[in-house]
Length: 289
Image 1: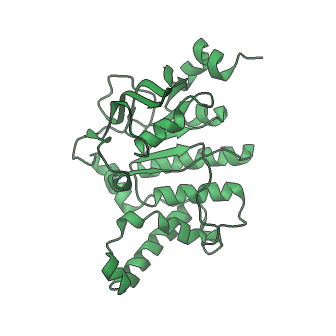
Image 2: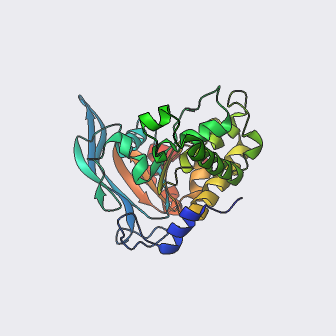
Image 3: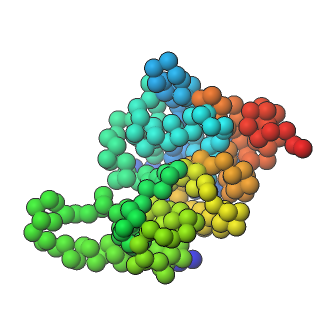
């Protein structure tokens, strides 16, 4: 794969977060509650929809550079948490901090600008647009054009050329360059999943939310995607929050796992610890045959 771009490499070398606060890249074993480098801190978050409690006092933290998996049965509240972090929903109670700053008071349209990107359970690509154009959409927040300058096409060609070059670089990084001019329609499902990943990382996020990225993939495609996620995390110094039902993938790439059931956290720890936790086995993994 292609090395990460200069901006991401510089961020990795400096080891400092957006607020200039010194951070420690963990990217390895779960460091526990005494870690000093939490990039995302979820504290006592509750979400109610009328009389339905989707999340009930959820708390956990993700250290910079970690891959943290959020697992649990359908309806456990995983996607609800994603929607709170990406500011689609407001929590009924609780707080979330991102790089030490209050995330809850940010408007949804500012999330990408502060370095948070996400993918979705269902593909959200434009079928008639080329793969390159779909990836370029991921950089819409970086454009310096106003409505007036874009209408008059002042400086537009130069900026569009720069965006295209960056999108091409990400496609090459994910081995998608051969599909750059191909419409998204008609491409294999596994390829489209990587296109959506490319669109998410082209904006150089620090926190990447992956909502069931392996859904609908074959076993070989799941293994390939798992390798891609780990490589992208390492090359770009990303922090990843992953929702996934494919347990082989979860246990293979996660540094820590948080388990939800009926909106509450029932376990948190290393993948090896989660696999032995009786509460998790009973609620989700199932007893071994």
